[in-house]
Length: 340
Ligand code: NAD
Image (cartoon, rainbow, N blue to C red):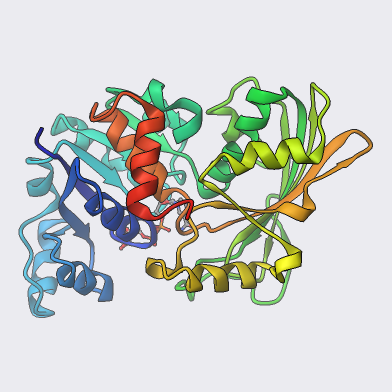
């Protein structure tokens, strides 16, 4: 079977990671990546032997002046691919829909776009089979991916009566020098609840979930405090067993002296992964508690990377490369070293 040909539009935080993850698969390949400017990331794409395309014809000169050869424009690239992964900044990707439709290709958007852009929101474990053969899909945001990974198995196994989540969000990605705060806590949004609960409902419509969110002066990871009322009785060990069977969930513990997101990121560096990525939800095993009959625990989410394996699985489903979601997840995990 020939490999699915994939374009990456927007080679930034998410785009460069998805490009590497696709390259690691046997059933798909990168046909080219699109940049707006000849930045260090464009040079990195060149070094990694990805064919580079300019977002529009007027940008080509700037690439040539920087000594970077481009193979054409976004329009040229889209003429010869099966699927485009749109990794442009949130809110920008929707405007490309018409172009993707014009080329008759499939498209994946990221969580910065509204559900309506694709009309279908994706999480590998929760709804892989619904993505099979689809033309358009949105891989939900890093926070929504992390919440869905944690809540879907609970709902499947015990039933969720109500979930309440406080999201403590990183202010900016590490390479972003423009966003803050440097020294403040920002209720974001101030009006409650936050949009994160409804975003989980774009995948699990029936789930009762209320979320509040603040932004903190950190760049490393998001941090979630979860409180879940389950329909059936449980003991903390049941929850540990449930999550232990999920490779996209990794346990850490205070007993191992992992007591902060900084130490989680140190662990990611020690695992020797590319870019120190932590693709799994990181749950503090010793935080999993039953208090007054309800479940409580803490998890950290590496915003730059948790959605990357989900993009690979979405490609596999949409391009009908694998009909069994579990097999796709296993393949993606193996090639990306997830769960080790
Ligand atoms: P980013 O700013 O790091 O990268 C975006 C890339 O798109 C940059 O290379 C930029 O030059 C390029 N770009 C800008 N305008 C463009 C245009 N008109 N056409 C083509 N390329 C253009 O952004 P990101 O963090 O990778 O976010 C991409 C998407 O992923 C957003 O929807 C975002 O909400 C979502 N997302 C981001 C994170 C995260 O934490 N960074 C996590 C999950 C999902």
